[in-house]
Image (tube, rainbow, N blue to C red; front, side, top):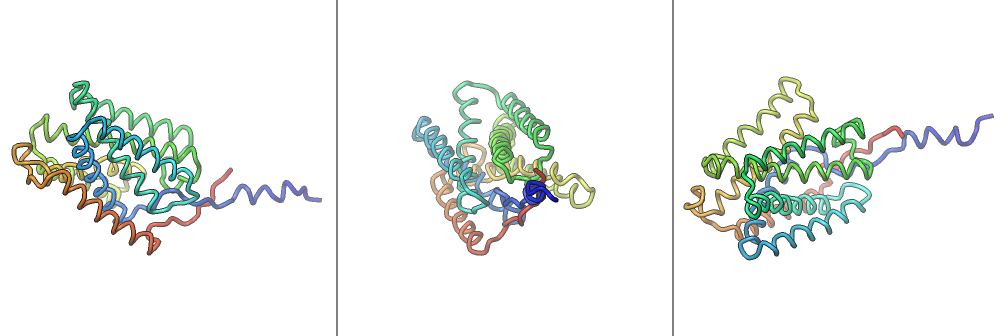
Length: 265
């Protein structure tokens, strides 16, 4: 006679859980780059009025959106992308504050954040056995995911400022460099069989300086990195509107929702 607990065990072991992050598509990368540009412009605009205000908005905004994201039972476009947007603002403030307030050079902060990203990935991999975004179906994995995302934003901010300011390449030139750089992991995955997890996180890091460099080029005056001088406020507002429009479309079409995954308990 079969034990009832034995009969229930396969069901528990093969339970399908819903992913908390979207499928990686072209739309995913477009919105990701737009949020990085928005985070850069918004952080600079707030900091120009008050560094304390910028830090407060970034910290509170991230705390609120992350709280809702962690409470969600599945990927919800508005909640997820609002959290990404606030990570962009807070990550920019975290990277800029260490340089501006403490005077730490960009090469040092870039190296430190690179170590932080590597540490997040190593600990995550050792703890969970995978770094795939298809595996973000538990609270612990989601916490690893967001910690890594935050570290990549800080790294990308420092790297972008390193090329534009320390190396004096300018915002447009930096943007073009990172645009070319982000094609490398894609090409390596597409034609040379680079591991998809490695390709994803390499590209994810590069989206930050890519979006931020072009946002700075449009927003900053010619006297600062040969910008167009549109202003951080208008750039922030424009990008918020564009992001909102895309996220509304995503929500209405259910674009990017991953299928439930079977995971072993």
